[in-house]
Length: 134
Figure 1 (cartoon, rainbow, N blue to C red):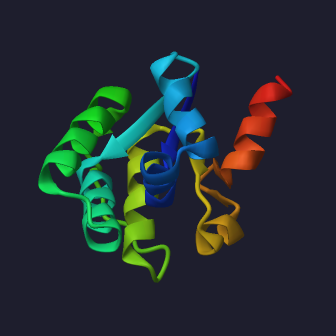
Figure 2: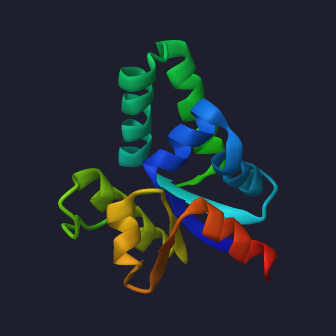
């Protein structure tokens, strides 16, 4: 099983639009991958859904519960300052603590890094393509 950490933008895309990002969540439900998530990532997802997409409290609560069921909740033990964008650092912290093999994101700043302490950083399309070629 491949353990990955998804960036906030993947959760937003999955919950708001479906598509490739939703396929990642389905892979976790099916047991094809294990997704690691942390409380700060869940909080950021809920904040964006509330502020940018006007999600109501009931829907936000439902989304938080679903994410906790789909993903393995980890509690990062160290604070990193690798990127200038603080939410990106929370993704790196989660991935490092969880021992993730990869980070899936559409964030150009994270994608430019390419890898962090042996953790590959790639977009959803490349991740899904790599999974097909195994």
